Amino acid sequence: MIEVNRLTKRYGDKLAVDHLTFTVRPGMVTGFLGPNGAGKSTTMRMMLDLDRPTAGSVTIDGRPYRQLREPLRSIGALLEAKSVHPGRTAYNHLLWLAQSNRIPRARVDEVLRLVGLQDVARRRSGGFSLGMGQRLGIAAALLGDPEILMFDEPVNGLDPEGILWIRTLMQSLARDGRTVFVSSHLMSEMALTAEHLIVIGQGRLLADLPMNEFIDRNSRSYVRLRSPQPEALLDALAAAGITAVASEREEGVWEVPDGDAAKIGELAAARGVVLHELSPQRASLEEAFMQMTANAVEYHAGTEI
Ligand SMILES: Nc1ncnc2c1ncn2[C@@H]1O[C@H](COP(=O)(O)OP(=O)(O)OP(=O)(O)O)[C@@H](O)[C@H]1O
Image (tube, rainbow, N blue to C red; front, side, top):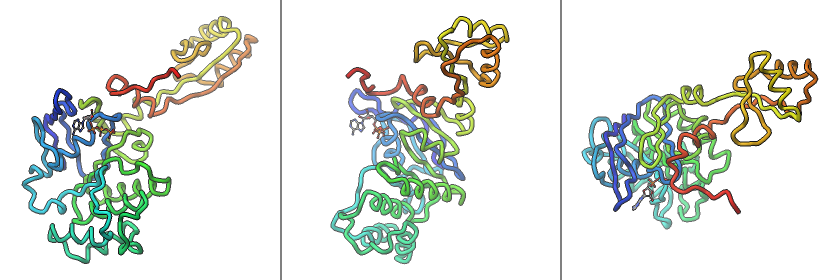
């Protein structure tokens, strides 16, 4: 379990992490979401004592990181920045880490097999592809067989096979009863991986809730309509007690929240109203996430060219 209590980090006049309080529990994958610059990496670095909080605290199974005697046995982490010496082989990199935490040499071969790097273990890691580098980072995180695992943007730059592999691995670690904490700025990826969500924006907590609750709340469905006879269409719907609202995003488009497309089509046909579009829609989770974090995005892309 990871407990974060009023955690705060200030860089000059920038408040990167702002009084964050949440708990990451065992037995599930917890997704840590936020737009770029939200403070995810800074929070994770403070969890590992790589950065000192301005205020507040983090504990790993009840203790601050620096009080853990052999930290790799408690918490394993894959961070964004690569910390592998490029001239070292994968095997030697892991052996060096194992020895600093009194982990037996046999475990090095075990984790190399687990991540599928056994055949390239004696090659210098400087020549590794991005996917191989990620696998090596994960091997290092698993080395001490820790109960807590933390991954910062683990699927960044990976191909679909690599993404699927990491997702499956995280879920199986959670099924073993471990605490798995993974950051991402992609809602769609998290929806497939995590059971619980922590969302932050500009260093502040925006949501802490189970994934299915987030999906229930945000998977708004509606019927999208376009017609050259909008007044006749709205009358036909109103007569049946159905309200259509003008789309906020597109002119000439109407939306019926939770509408039944077949029924709407029949009502229009009965009055001879021409329809140019009648389509059931579901708002995506990505859209819901973007709305939730809209006010907390650091840099918006311009819409004008
Ligand atoms: N060492 C530092 N010195 C000054 N500012 C920093 C430092 N590290 C991070 N920041 C700032 O703190 C804020 C949070 O950054 P952080 O990297 O934690 O965000 P993030 O959510 O991990 O973003 P991303 O998804 O882009 O990796 C940003 O505004 C960043 O510019």
